[in-house]
Image (cartoon, rainbow, N blue to C red):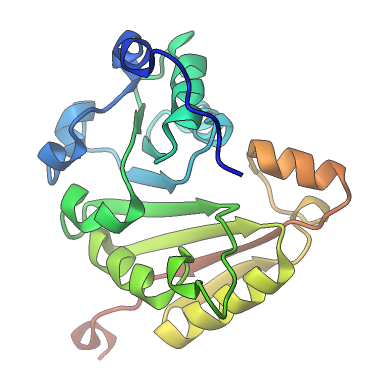
Length: 219
């Protein structure tokens, strides 16, 4: 179900300018200049209302976080939450994941987070899944040489499908958890969906995937 359009979005986004990154395509290759440092860049695709991004930015002040959300109704809620106490290492931005190549230069990103992405039906709309091979090709381009992907979901079938897709793409899978909240994983920051689904008794699945090395570096 789509979120209802919020009122006065332009005015509200302008009031959150301290935590926003407007005109993202103009920042391609220049994201570190926006933050004013050379720290790693971590990208969350589909940040929702911002709980994960804010929590991670608070825990890791030496990392620059970029939180992407195409649904402006959710994004303004995230930005307004952060605006109450702005974090210098976090910026929110609105664009579609299909435009990633236009927003980030090759090797500009160190880590990508996919948290509770929409598990589109695999038979009819698998190409819209953010773990589909076409998206993996884009991630492979914008991630640095040793960059990685972190993926969390409550949907077991989506997780299994994604695991197979990522393996077939040739990335190294590591730190797989089939029940994250009952594992020894430390430092987990929950999203709004994660808290809701976990409270309802759903398992949370998580994996990390490291991008493949160029052939000349394997020798």
